Length: 326
Image (cartoon, rainbow, N blue to C red; front, side, top):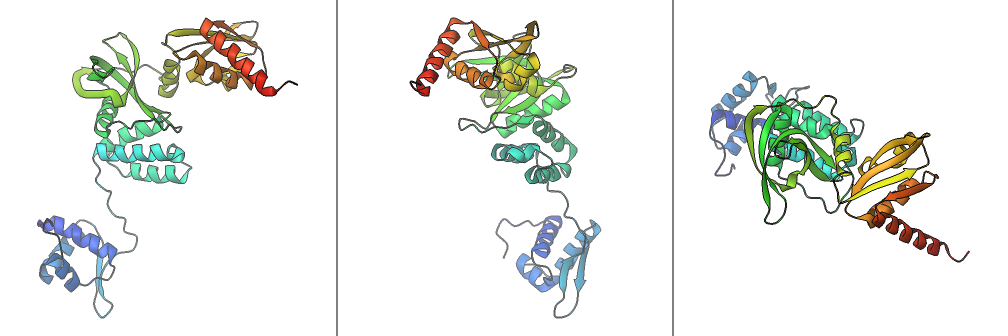
């Protein structure tokens, strides 16, 4: 029996017939008619609609006869809206590190879904997947899929946006931005953009974006933009304590040990390096710095700020104490 809200149009009922035939190969016209509460003649009409649409439904007479889907038939693509498709991809990215890897089973399956999506839906989904860098974070907040979909579509279309951005509980700011890319890092979703309001590059948390208005102006993104690299470099700058650390090792060696989110590595002469960054939490940064550069086995010195020098000194004393009297 069909529910009271069952479809009544011939095309909708034909799709119900297709689902029943897929789930019950060999189902008879009589059983189909009983399930849909229609006549056998109506069932033949619905089967005709499916055949006209290119679905190879075969019918056989006799005791074991009935309707079946012809061999080799592939079901037409599911019809996702952009927010639905993006929500699916976001959920997979949240839960599986292999979702961005085409050689991983999960990534391969996700790629198959994306390939059958209509182009206007597939392009934003592919863009998000391409710049996703995942690592677990229990404090992560998944943003609105509708908002994320609108941002990604505007990135792809190069359309300027007007955003309402929440800076705090009672602090909102309206910003006009050129959206360059949506990037996922450490389970947080960011919009990398150029803010015309601040006349500077900005990285915005998407879960803090409220209203989104698409403006008439177009824009051209920077040539050679690497969204993930740009995001990591931005996250290492702009905080209260400016950091400078000298490392007695080549730039290439330091870059292998130090995450870009911890700072920019630049040469300082004689083949040696300097790390330039900023932080709000010197104690946290000291632990990250010692852990990263400790694997390098090369001397390093904290030039500034004094808060970081004190934090490294305290951490060093704790490490010495932990090693024991010997």
